[in-house]
Amino acid sequence: MRDFNGKTAVVTGAASGIGSALSLAFAARGAKVVLADVEANALEAVRADVEAAGMEAIAVPTDVTDEGQVQALADAAWDRFGAVHVVCNNAGVLIRGNMLDAERKDWEWIMGVNVWGVINGVRAFVPRMRESDEEGHIVNTASEAGHFAGDGYGVYNTSKFAVVGLTESLARDLRNTKIGVSMLCPGQVETGIFTNTNRPAAFRKASEDAPMDRRIAENVQEPADVAAKVIAGIEDGALYVFSHEDEARQLISKRNGRLMRSVGG
Image (cartoon, rainbow, N blue to C red; front, side):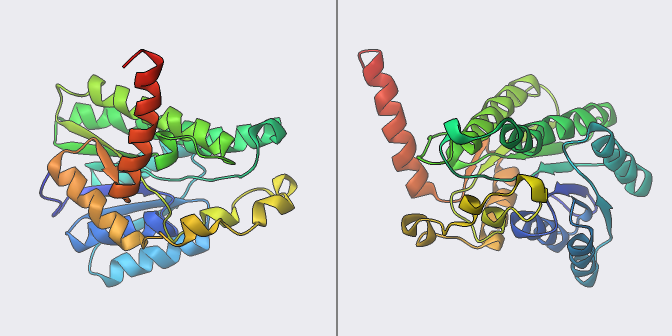
């Protein structure tokens, strides 16, 4: 897909960070935008920004872990704009720490948002997009952590490896259709993911508020720069979109080296 003018883009996790940057990037290219997030007030602010840029937008408060709410999001998109051409399953959350210290509710929260949120988005939108027989594109937000398991992020790594496998499989299942598939694999980006502001209070832990390590903080990118790479990836039909190409190349090479050595390569 190379022309976004007059098309409709749906973005989850749209109230901040990469999601809000994606919403504005689509609007800048002439697309109408359907914004979804659990943060209703912040979502309205992004809607106002999109409309200030001269494009139509609707804000639909949505918990992506709830299949019914995601189906309602799809209904709202089709009811308002009559078609959907791009879906960015972007909502994501993070916890840090040894995975053996994680409680069941930690796993349920991370997997619910990061994995089931993507599954719910695919199930709600892709069948309708295929029926329309129009050109379309799905973008699922994975992570560098979906290709290389770094220390201290075991639960998060697990969820993002799942998104990578899901997206690679979806690309194969849709390869003979008009719908393209990409996965966004960001490294460290200037977002609020480390603060976990959307996590229920009962699930918050003091350890999750510790400062991020210095190595990551020194290589941070801005959401708008990442959004531009996503747009380019959609235009080019790229399956993998990395925010930090050099860093990802090193990490993936290291992992692949271990795999090859394990089979005598």
